[in-house]
Image (cartoon, rainbow, N blue to C red; front, side, top):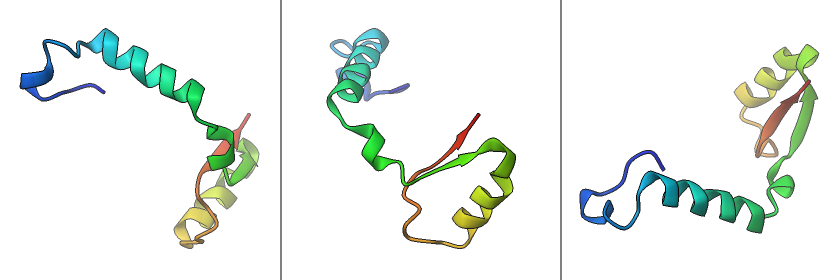
Length: 64
């Protein structure tokens, strides 16, 4: 949302793009896209999971 085609900049300023993105985040169930929540203390395990190419790792989130 940081850049846009110059032909559309008149209607889609940064504020409108940001507001639209936030609106869509509210509409989507983003929680279901998180496949793994791993404590920050086990970050090395998270990176190993990603490096292994495990297809079940849709979205890995480090928790604090």
